[in-house]
Image (cartoon, rainbow, N blue to C red):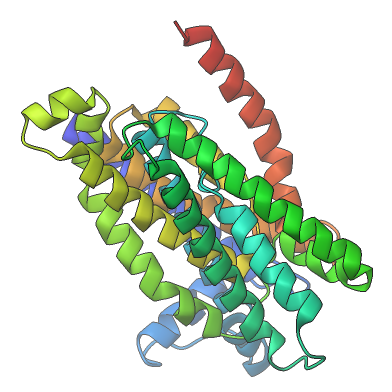
Length: 344
């Protein structure tokens, strides 16, 4: 792909993010003009140099209610899609996604444990549930590493995947037991498991930002190495790279970003499969373009999915995991059929 064509795709991704941002801010129970939304954003960014066309009430709705939620959706979508593209490159499998190593199951177990065993205080729950989900996700991945490394020293990605399946099954079994023993919390648990982007302001955004920065820098810095790894470990080693070291670093970085995203949003599936594979089909197979475009289009995709989730049945909300599954399940079938067709 020429540099000019690559630049066009990056610009298209930036436009998609901008459209998703404005649409997410403009539409809802109270509809605002997209032009007024853009003007109000410029008003705040310039310190009031540009006059806003919104009333004080509408400005509060935009900046205090909608903007944190839309920004959170952009960040979560970017992390899930970027991590999905990274996993697909590391495992050389277009069906790989961020939950491959037990991240989802570990996060679900952590959140479930807090929900069913926490004291009756509703004040500490918004802090404890994301923290428990984050710890559970990282613990599950650590278990996957320990189990997958036993006797193989990470030489087989299949071993690592099977270890992730085993850890996920173990976490799910414990989670099911807890739900059976505390049936009064099932509705609350499943509400979290289906995914949500509700915020209490900018707290969740600020909590997620450091992990977004670390994951993005590490993964994007290694995008050329992923292209080399795609031709085989021996060829990569002959060029002076350390395949196993790069693979472990990328898995850790992608898992860190995924765990942080899951901690604040619950379990939102299919983003890590839909976006990277769509980018691969449209823009080419080089990870130098797949990863940055996955970050941009993943952000736009989830922000728009959240817009549908909160407007289709307004004032009620559909869990965002249901919306992504609605689009993701058929796409997964297409990818699976395509993969089978081209498989040797």
